[in-house]
Image 1 (cartoon, rainbow, N blue to C red):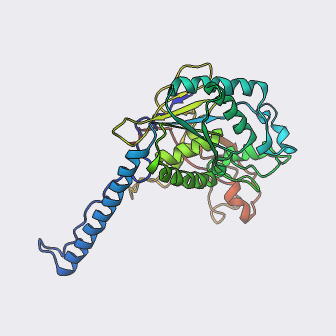
Image 2 (cartoon, helix red, strand yellow):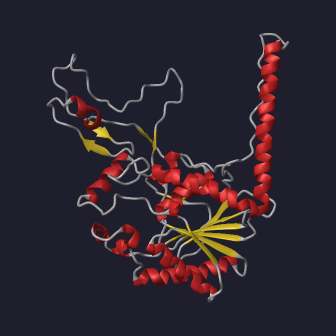
Image 3 (cartoon, rainbow, N blue to C red):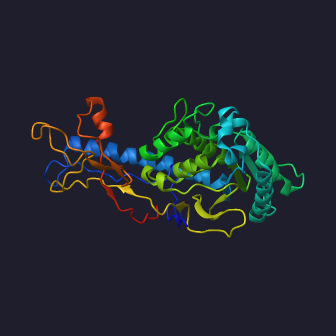
Length: 362
């Protein structure tokens, strides 16, 4: 069972957090301030006041219009969730829900209605067929009541390159070895590309909240894209992305805030047939971090290549045992010299540190 991720619990960190820069007072080596330094200091303090004022205005507007709750919901089970090969000849954006997916959508509507009750609500939905069908199932819990629903193409699923290629399974294996966040599928996207879309989406969302009067916002989207949006919203580190456990079909991620604080917390997640789970997002039990030099000049060197001597010291390059950045062992190349352009790929080793307990982001 995946561990619960502490990141997100108490993570009040969306953009424009209003933190003021520390005032810096340049000095000329004495307790006196030179005229030039004094002018620089005044300019610095003026800049700080401008930034502080802008931040204050931002949060004042957000406090007035932010919803009390934001709920992310992944779509129900789709045709590709049971037969991935279907995307070789059917467009990803045209996939329908399965019978089980429809039941999950109806159940998600009942759970969502339990969460928000009779409070006002509006929906933002990915334009893909499976998310629109999921939304229709969810809305059945409102018994025909008129609810505002808006599509936004920026929250669509990660693009894997039009129709899936014949070697898609090999590409997913390569992605796992390379690192999921930066891996871009041929003619498609990486989660890093999706992160840019998430930033644009959130910026417009902040503006819409300046005059919002609706108590709840529900975003129906896709598992990976929801995680990327939440990652951007709370400013999680990139290194945390690969540790995140994927969302289940029709799982709810519920963000809430108090009436006097515009900043959100992840209150809980709630998958169908399960109890609410508190403590933020889930992480994988086998998650690892890459060891990073801490700046100590006496610290031992870290290298992507190790275990071999130069060709000047050794006539032939010996075979290596190497590890990828997650600490998994791979057999090394043979003793025959590698081509120059291949050496950086075939003779890699990254020292992986044990996965630390993720701290709460404040």
